[in-house]
Image (cartoon, rainbow, N blue to C red; front, side):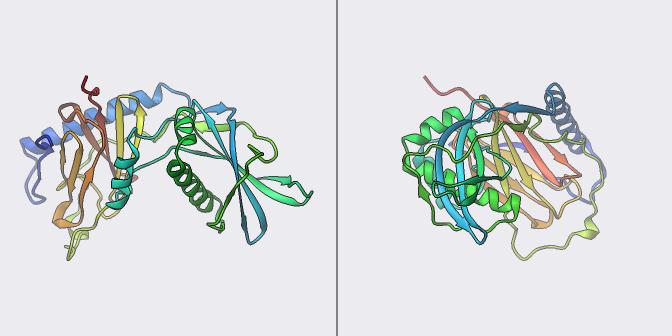
Length: 290
C-alpha cells in the first residue's frame, strides 16, 4: 500500500490563522469552485425512461407490493469493484459502498388475480444491471438496498422476504422518471466558524458515515457526515492510493476506510460544507496498471 499523503495538516484550534491554515482554506476554496463549476454547467434534472429488468414480489401491512428493478444508462454506476472486494468492505462494516438508484413513485396496479396491489420502479445503471444478471450476490444486494430505500423514502415497512417473478419482468407499466443532474448542492467555501466551546471531548472517537459515488469514470467523490462540527478547523485528512483516513478535533471523529480503487492522492482535494456539516472529498482515479 502506498504511503499516505497528508492533505490537510492538523490545526490547533487556539492558534491564530497561520500559513498552514491559509493553505488549508485555499485548498478547500479551490475544490469548492471546481465542483461548483462542474455542477452549474448541468441542468437541474433529466427525464429518463427506464428499461424493464425483473420484478420482485413482497408485501406490507397494506397488501401486496411489487418492485420493478429497471435500468437506464443515465443512472451513474457504482464504484467498480470485485465481489470479493465488496464482501471485504461489507464484512469490515464499511458503509461507504453506494449504488445510485432512482426510486419512482408508487402506482396502483392489478395483479394476475385482478386484486389491487402497489408497484414501485427502481432504476439502476444499465451496465451494472447487466453485471448483476450474472451474480446472485449483486442481485440480492440490489433488492435489499432498493427495499430499504423505498422504506426510508415512503415510510414503509416491507417484508424482507421476497420472491423473484420468473415470467414477468415488470408489474403494470414503467413510467418516466426525473433524476437529478446535479448530484449534490454547491459547496460553500470554508469560513472560520469553528466554536470549540460547543464541543466536548468524547470518550472514544465516533466513526462518521461515509458515502462514496462515481461522479465520472475517473473521479470518485466522498461525503463524510460530521454533524457535531461547525467548521473544518481541527480536521486532518490523509489519502493513500486505496485508503482514506480522517481525524476530528478533540478526538470527536475517526475514520479509516479502505477504498478498493487506485486514487491519485496528489490531485485529491477536500472542502467542508458548513450548511450540510459534511466534508466533501474529490479523488481523481489512476488508470489501471497495464
